[in-house]
Image (cartoon, rainbow, N blue to C red; front, side):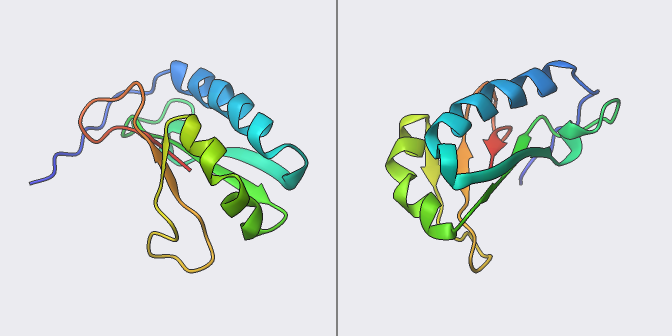
Length: 104
């Protein structure tokens, strides 16, 4: 059985997002249109699963494919489309326990 942990809002979630977004911006540079902190951890005051979700908007999906090796060097695991056609999904287990992780 999968256990889902929901905890009180942590102000550090925003800092975690900012630190990770800087690293990802350096990888994508001119290929990136924007990067966003999404999901429940992005809502101040909201209890949430301690998972930092990031959405990166690129000029093309091929830009993600070209940068997969660089993203993996940051500790992410490439998961392909992961059930949604036309997207690229990456998962990083950092600062987490059990299934609490960062995803984009």
